Image 1: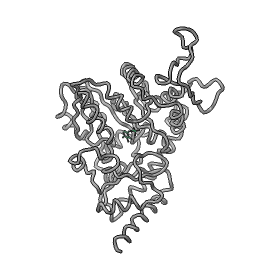
Image 2: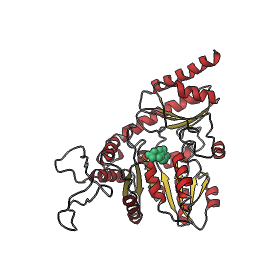
Image 3: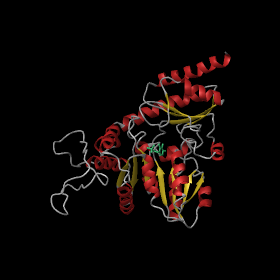
Image 4: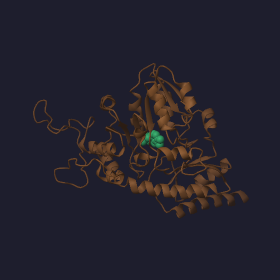
Length: 390
Ligand SMILES: *Cc1c(COP(=O)(O)O)cnc(C)c1O
């Protein structure tokens, strides 16, 4: 279990049992039920694949080995299914404090499902401890963070948030999608639950939708397993296998993703049509030092604002190698328009306050050659110039 991170991406937990035929790639157990050897004895430890499945269990063990400090991991059919299961821990009348700059789907979940179920949620700048302290109530059950946040790349101090949550007897929940366990381990900084959209860097090839809930506490894990098997959004055996396959290369991919992002962010900062770049790996980022203090990297997510809505649209239409699409974290670079694609359900006033304007673009640096990516953005912009002067 003390293997280095790169090794754990490939082998997960040391000494775990392999398959009967010593298959090097773990098999896909494509079955719904498992036979019982006698009444009350399932023999294999598995009954039914909604509850548990060997391929999914192997993936969950691998994630537990990667997300340092975790005791258990549950794999879901999407990141949103993982977030939804997490919110099932709360009861009507409970209060939760969330980062104000959150993945749009989580904002929609809160407004359409959680509030209907009697939860009260306050959105604050969790980068400012004072704002959290002011929002805490006797019935606050959790602080929910994304760091860096989506899409404005705000960094929250995980240790400080943990202290505030625990003083109140509340949980600290951290969405670690952007940095992955390769770069950041929230449990070691005091988190109680870690969420991942495995759709992004973990599976890593823009081909699988999945999600994870990692826990550092056996009791919490047992409660969540009851929720998961009851609500039923388990990850399929095949998607579990695809994600295992993706995880094997997580270490090398994250290194190259970050190299490419650094090149792109530095290039963007020098362009006349770019007004501002938000990338936690740039020293110009206001929380560069905080991110460096609590993680080992800056990842591959860059947001930038341009001089006009017209420029934003021209870049989106003009890119040829980079795909204009939502999502992130895969081999292919993606350019996203948060105001229309990922965050339309965030109220306009909140979007304006955060800076999610019609001039904001989000770039997920993929694994292509960085010069090719820069050339692609350049040609999209030059076409724009030609368009303007006609
Ligand atoms: C994509 C994403 C989610 C939702 O995950 P899905 O796999 O799309 O359901 C949650 N949080 C963050 C930060 C994300 O990027």
